[in-house]
Image 1 (spheres, protein in one colour):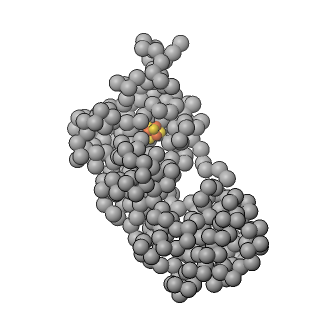
Image 2 (image 1 turned 135 degrees about the vertical axis):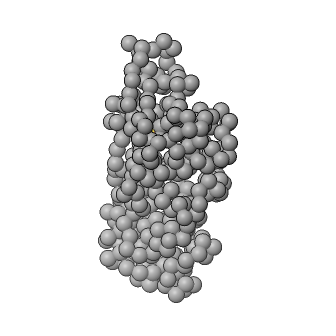
Image 3 (image 1 turned 90 degrees about the vertical axis):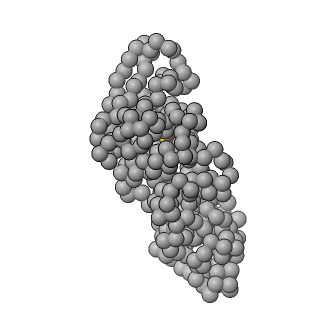
Length: 295
Ligand code: SF4
């Protein structure tokens, strides 16, 4: 028999804790709705005036375009607080010991996983520890080290040019400003913001595939252009929160809010998410979708 799943949030949500899910099953009277058993009008509504967001504002309001700017900001910050409680260890998942290592690792992470990059960089940094050493690297040897990452010829070329530029134009030191960083080979705003935020403590927003997808699912933006996403989401949060906000969204995107099958039934921000129901809403099936990033 088909069932609807209603998700209730316990009162701890109003005291600053992550909402706890309680599930009640009901016989289905409406049939299937999309890939979910949960009709849109049954999206979990917040307790009015409680839970850290404004009275009367729900995920449905965002969906219907009725959410005020103030309500959007408060809902966005509430989501970030819940994700911070859910992922207290959130941080850059690339291993690095210096701004130079983070810059190189971030460039190498294109089209591959952080796990694979972390398996490769110890050998790389041991053999060529700084821009000077990398600028003088033997191309064939470098390509062999980078081969497991894919696109190893292009990545080798990028690193050789990067080493030379950092050495010649910045005295062997990674520059500390965005305008300077984006002049380096293979470095765009995303990579520059990763380095600025995680190596130098300069606020920046890193719009990768996870961040953009989640920002749109949360109704924070409708943009797909990374620069526009960065501007619109950045306006919802104080700059001091930007770096950790990125980690929270990226961790949530990698673990629960997957591109193809988000684990909505095991999601701590379900009540605040207009996209609830895009993925699996059955709590047991959704829990099975929660995963750690793989290599
Ligand atoms: S898992 Fe579902 S409910 Fe949670 S953020 Fe993603 S789309 Fe929204």
